[in-house]
Image (cartoon, rainbow, N blue to C red):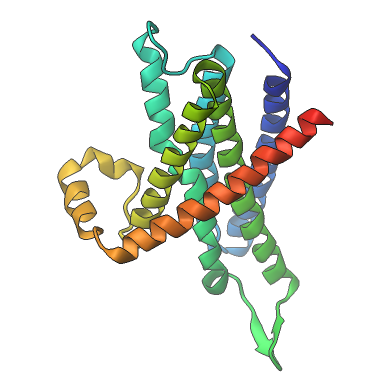
Length: 229
């Protein structure tokens, strides 16, 4: 059944798709005409951000979430969403590439870049925000369904668990260079996960979970204010 949020969901999807295509075309054009492949990895990251977003859109449209008495498709779609979801938040760590992939220099402690450098800077920032926003909206849609089915306590518990798991996935992705596909090699994955059981990992996951939850709570309340307007 359609509702106001679903209509907004579709509208935002159109905007996100438009901006994703424009960003990808600009990045690809720089590679084709200027042999600049420094930002080509962002196209793949945009694609990875779309995967859980589309899954959540399908789930929201059909009201398919884990429910008693429903088919196994509910479980499969939710697990697929959870499997790919950390990619939408991992993209925020791509900000680390500003130093190595954007050309700049210092002149009397002032950062100086030409127009090409500023373009790459804004492309990088814009794609990071694009993927991150897709992640936040996707999680909001999932929580919205859970809240209507099981209540706010369950839905917020789900959000907290997703943020913890995503923060850990960001850690092993950034420091161990593992990705979603490594789950197909469980022995390698298990051996690498064992190596992360130390205080540095716990502090990283704790920090990222806290910051991601803060951003999400702000987003959630902005939506609530808009509803009440």
